[in-house]
Length: 120
Image (cartoon, rainbow, N blue to C red):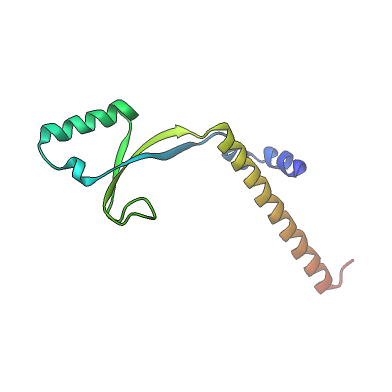
Protein backbone atom coordinates (compact mmCIF):
# COMPACT_ATOMS: atom_id res chain seq x y z
CA UNK A 1 0.00 0.00 0.00
CA UNK A 2 2.87 2.43 0.82
CA UNK A 3 4.42 1.92 -2.63
CA UNK A 4 1.04 2.62 -4.19
CA UNK A 5 0.82 5.93 -2.32
CA UNK A 6 4.38 6.81 -3.41
CA UNK A 7 3.49 6.01 -7.03
CA UNK A 8 0.30 8.04 -6.79
CA UNK A 9 2.24 11.05 -5.52
CA UNK A 10 4.38 11.01 -8.69
CA UNK A 11 1.32 11.31 -10.92
CA UNK A 12 0.36 15.02 -11.27
CA UNK A 13 -3.30 14.30 -12.08
CA UNK A 14 -3.63 12.25 -8.91
CA UNK A 15 -1.69 14.79 -6.85
CA UNK A 16 -4.36 17.37 -7.61
CA UNK A 17 -6.93 15.02 -6.09
CA UNK A 18 -4.65 14.51 -3.07
CA UNK A 19 -5.04 18.11 -1.98
CA UNK A 20 -7.74 19.06 0.47
CA UNK A 21 -10.95 19.67 -1.41
CA UNK A 22 -13.81 21.99 -0.72
CA UNK A 23 -16.96 20.16 0.33
CA UNK A 24 -20.58 21.25 0.27
CA UNK A 25 -22.11 20.13 3.55
CA UNK A 26 -25.71 20.29 4.76
CA UNK A 27 -25.69 21.79 8.25
CA UNK A 28 -29.41 21.81 8.99
CA UNK A 29 -32.86 21.53 7.50
CA UNK A 30 -35.76 23.95 7.71
CA UNK A 31 -39.43 23.22 7.31
CA UNK A 32 -41.23 25.10 4.54
CA UNK A 33 -43.61 26.28 7.28
CA UNK A 34 -40.75 28.40 8.64
CA UNK A 35 -41.00 30.42 5.43
CA UNK A 36 -44.75 30.87 5.64
CA UNK A 37 -46.25 34.04 7.05
CA UNK A 38 -45.31 37.68 7.16
CA UNK A 39 -42.37 38.70 5.02
CA UNK A 40 -40.82 40.46 8.02
CA UNK A 41 -40.86 37.17 9.95
CA UNK A 42 -39.37 35.28 6.99
CA UNK A 43 -36.59 37.86 6.71
CA UNK A 44 -35.88 37.50 10.44
CA UNK A 45 -35.66 33.73 9.97
CA UNK A 46 -33.21 34.17 7.10
CA UNK A 47 -31.16 36.62 9.17
CA UNK A 48 -30.96 33.97 11.91
CA UNK A 49 -29.68 31.44 9.36
CA UNK A 50 -27.08 33.95 8.18
CA UNK A 51 -26.03 34.60 11.78
CA UNK A 52 -25.58 30.85 12.42
CA UNK A 53 -23.91 29.83 9.15
CA UNK A 54 -22.56 32.99 7.52
CA UNK A 55 -23.54 34.96 4.44
CA UNK A 56 -22.24 32.30 2.02
CA UNK A 57 -24.71 29.64 3.21
CA UNK A 58 -27.11 28.41 0.53
CA UNK A 59 -30.63 27.01 0.68
CA UNK A 60 -31.88 24.17 -1.50
CA UNK A 61 -35.42 22.84 -1.67
CA UNK A 62 -36.21 19.12 -1.66
CA UNK A 63 -39.77 18.07 -2.34
CA UNK A 64 -39.18 14.67 -0.71
CA UNK A 65 -36.98 15.73 2.21
CA UNK A 66 -33.29 15.16 2.87
CA UNK A 67 -33.66 12.42 5.47
CA UNK A 68 -34.45 8.83 4.59
CA UNK A 69 -37.12 8.96 7.28
CA UNK A 70 -38.79 12.12 6.01
CA UNK A 71 -40.93 12.35 2.91
CA UNK A 72 -42.23 15.86 3.42
CA UNK A 73 -40.73 18.90 1.72
CA UNK A 74 -37.71 20.50 3.38
CA UNK A 75 -35.17 23.23 2.82
CA UNK A 76 -31.57 22.21 3.34
CA UNK A 77 -29.04 24.77 4.57
CA UNK A 78 -25.61 24.14 3.03
CA UNK A 79 -22.14 25.61 3.57
CA UNK A 80 -18.85 25.10 1.76
CA UNK A 81 -15.77 24.13 3.77
CA UNK A 82 -12.45 22.38 3.32
CA UNK A 83 -12.50 18.71 4.17
CA UNK A 84 -11.14 17.85 7.61
CA UNK A 85 -7.81 16.08 8.11
CA UNK A 86 -9.71 12.89 8.91
CA UNK A 87 -11.79 13.10 5.72
CA UNK A 88 -8.64 13.88 3.72
CA UNK A 89 -6.76 10.85 5.10
CA UNK A 90 -9.80 8.63 4.49
CA UNK A 91 -9.98 9.82 0.87
CA UNK A 92 -6.23 9.24 0.37
CA UNK A 93 -6.52 5.67 1.67
CA UNK A 94 -9.56 5.02 -0.51
CA UNK A 95 -7.70 6.34 -3.56
CA UNK A 96 -4.66 4.20 -2.76
CA UNK A 97 -6.90 1.14 -2.38
CA UNK A 98 -8.62 1.84 -5.69
CA UNK A 99 -5.23 2.22 -7.38
CA UNK A 100 -3.98 -1.03 -5.84
CA UNK A 101 -7.12 -2.84 -7.03
CA UNK A 102 -6.67 -1.42 -10.55
CA UNK A 103 -2.99 -2.49 -10.54
CA UNK A 104 -4.04 -6.02 -9.58
CA UNK A 105 -6.65 -6.10 -12.36
CA UNK A 106 -3.98 -4.94 -14.83
CA UNK A 107 -1.57 -7.66 -13.67
CA UNK A 108 -4.30 -10.31 -13.90
CA UNK A 109 -5.21 -9.15 -17.41
CA UNK A 110 -1.55 -9.15 -18.45
CA UNK A 111 -1.08 -12.70 -17.14
CA UNK A 112 -4.28 -13.83 -18.86
CA UNK A 113 -3.14 -12.42 -22.20
CA UNK A 114 0.36 -13.78 -21.73
CA UNK A 115 -1.08 -17.27 -21.18
CA UNK A 116 -3.53 -16.90 -24.06
CA UNK A 117 -0.77 -15.85 -26.47
CA UNK A 118 1.65 -18.47 -25.18
CA UNK A 119 4.30 -15.98 -24.06
CA UNK A 120 6.68 -16.57 -21.20
